[in-house]
Amino acid sequence: MNIRELRKAAGLTQSQLAEKVGVAQATVAEWERGDYFPSAQKLPSIAEALDCTVGDLYRTDTL
Image 1 (tube, rainbow, N blue to C red):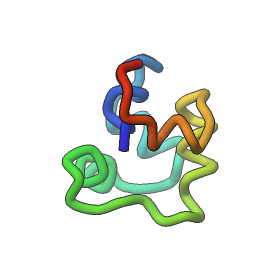
Image 2 (image 1 turned 30 degrees about the vertical axis):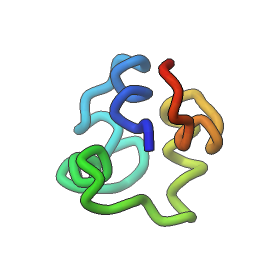
Image 3 (image 1 turned 60 degrees about the horizontal axis):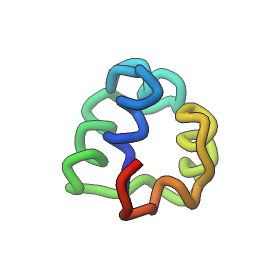
Image 4 (image 1 turned 90 degrees about the vertical axis):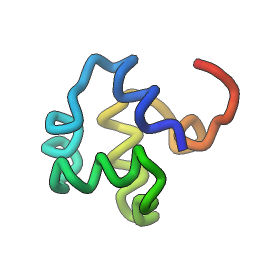
């Protein structure tokens, strides 16, 4: 997942993204490290917070 890259491109901190999607900052950190993946229910709110599509979250090419 490209959450880290998209978050940085959006100019958000982990804490800011966490607040926007209703999770703890530690959860965002786990997503970015690949320890866990967001639930399917969270993907639309993550995409909205990052101003991207759900598909963009899965892109493997560079942004």
